[in-house]
Image 1 (cartoon, rainbow, N blue to C red):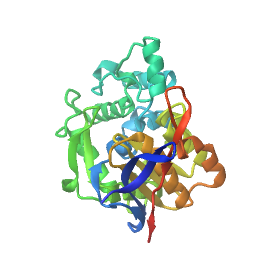
Image 2: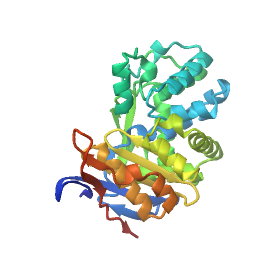
Image 3: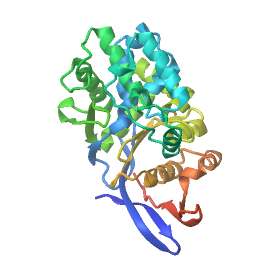
Image 4: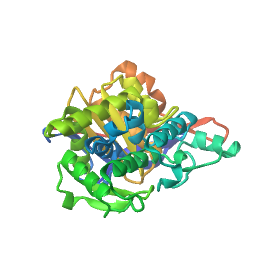
Length: 335
């Protein structure tokens, strides 16, 4: 049963609540803490991207096309489609000699509301490179080119590149691939349904290499280094993933998933965290994640202070006046 994670106040009243589930798992698979249902089955959505990008490395495509850490980071991203993102993506397309029209992710405005408003106001011409998943799609296409796979239906679950990716996700998250529930993500590729426990375990194994063979360990280390070295590529200006990794200064990676999923891997502690807000509302997600990081003593006072805008954001009216707050009340049960 999901538990109350976040309260939204207006004046003296709690006007709205958001329920959620979360689990903290160490690299050996031991549950260290949880709230709600640690084994709730849901889609990992874009929080899977760092694991999916491992396949670009394991396939040999990353080396063949000489992808940089910055380029690997944007493959892991739900980026905002800012100019610096589009520039990097264009350089990647040049490397693999493919036009942006080949991407099957769709043409979308920014997932960041502030930048989306800028795009609309300035009448930006939107292409597939503005889609937050375009980096992942370029990585998939590069893998197909290297492996000799066709491109026409690379987004279907039957395609060999997606079967390869499913194998990687199953191995990293330590779950039988037959037990992973496949759906279709917003960007048209398969999306993976599994217990929160396995998401958290996957991140713990990624950041430590525990239980992974040498090739997987090397790929996971490369992904980790790319994300912490180029956090601005993983989200964008003022994005939570970007700011969290900048504030943590290399100690962790964090990745957002649609419908309010969040996964974190903390390297030195060897733990993974998975969080899901039941109603999919992002306003509840970041305060909940911040409280969990604070309660688990993963972030220090200085790091928490740098992320104060995400910890306890105000509830604003139409004039920008604070009329309440959005506060996390997650009660972690530590084992």
